[in-house]
Image (cartoon, rainbow, N blue to C red):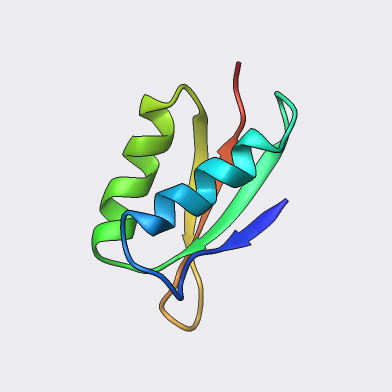
Length: 73
């Protein structure tokens, strides 16, 4: 599943990610397109605090990032 949060600000960025994760089954992967700055700093930590596994972060050519999360428990 994919979700794009580049058009909103924190904390709405995490709300979008949380809603997407809630719709998924355990073990599924989510790719979230996020901006640099506060989202890049906070979203991986927030996902882990919610009990999910951050698989990686890659930078895109346009300066955004892809945050890859595995839904756990």
